[in-house]
Length: 394
Image (cartoon, rainbow, N blue to C red):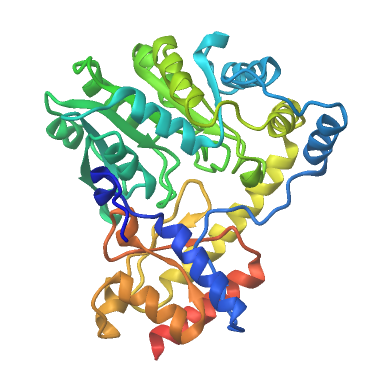
């Protein structure tokens, strides 16, 4: 007997990055020598002081339900972070703590979108954005960019994509998978377009804010476009900044009415985020941030090795990034030289021939590209480049 699922599930697929991780894990279990540059997870351990705070919370009995929108201590730490780092002031009822930044974005889509609505998503994009929109029974509308555009949409492209049905713009900067980051002037120009379209909410996904090394300081969207503060939901979290992916703590800040709706969605799904994780996240955000600076310096060192190395491989073209721990080289030349059909074929060739797992760009709305994570040791990256050269030369 085959049990039916809802019609909406016909348009939703499992996460491609999760599939790569599962495949790499299975092949390792079979005895294969596999290098995986597929998942976006820091290879650093969570700093000891943060782990100690989680242990202390357990020992203190902080193991009960918390308010659905987060503990007062963590919300105060989030408010302080926005004020100190971004010059943005929020009241407590404008903050929602979630089980990872992904839940904050999902809560927003469910709260804001419905049948007939559209959400604009610049491509390349994080793999979950389109399916979140579809699960809200709305339509994703893509603005395609490429390496020649520095992977950034222009104000003119945004204006052309807006319709009477547009309700949401999802803007990820620094961007997964490209490493591109909009500077303050570029954000302001995008903001000018949105000022003339008052029905559009901006979801500013800034989860990689701290992993940033451009010449200009990072600018939050609401910081660069203060007139749009009342229509911007800024999403962030501790996963990437503090190597706390498994702790599952994200947060959102924005208009009180939207944050309240998002909290209502959460109340009927997961309720509060983990009490222990919230205590650890509070300690992380209130602590000396020098440990973050050291991790970011290492990510940049790896970036500065990997991008020139990729550009030295026949058929590869890679743009320097301003942040994150990803590289997205265009590989159409390598695909053609190897007689393969597309980027998905190339990723299959890489794992089968040299044991290297990466993610096809098609998963990110970027056919002809592949994504590599450099959240791995330099030794691993050097071996990965060696295997890439071997696979392409073959």
